Image (cartoon, rainbow, N blue to C red; front, side):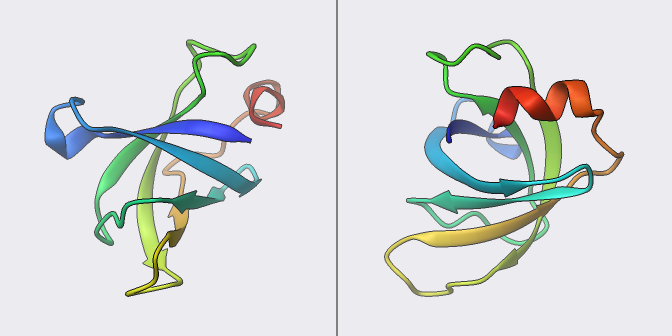
Amino acid sequence: MPVEVVRTEQGGADVIRATLADISQSGALVISPTTIPVGEWIVLRPDQKGAGFGVEITAIVDHNLTPGGPTAKLTCRFPQPVDYSVLRLFR
């Protein structure tokens, strides 16, 4: 699913269009065209064309599974479990 990744440490000005590969109550796997440093806080939201626009999930980047690759596979952890009613907007 297409998502927008907002880099909060960049003041919200840096929005990356990425792909959500997997999501659960505790975290997500995001495929990004740009590497985001491990430990950085981000906000995930459905692409603006999606039905869930306006919904956001705060996450922290835990791992980059493809360091040095052309795209970044990032595992992200949610600081609090996400309710299923919110998760369904990301599927």
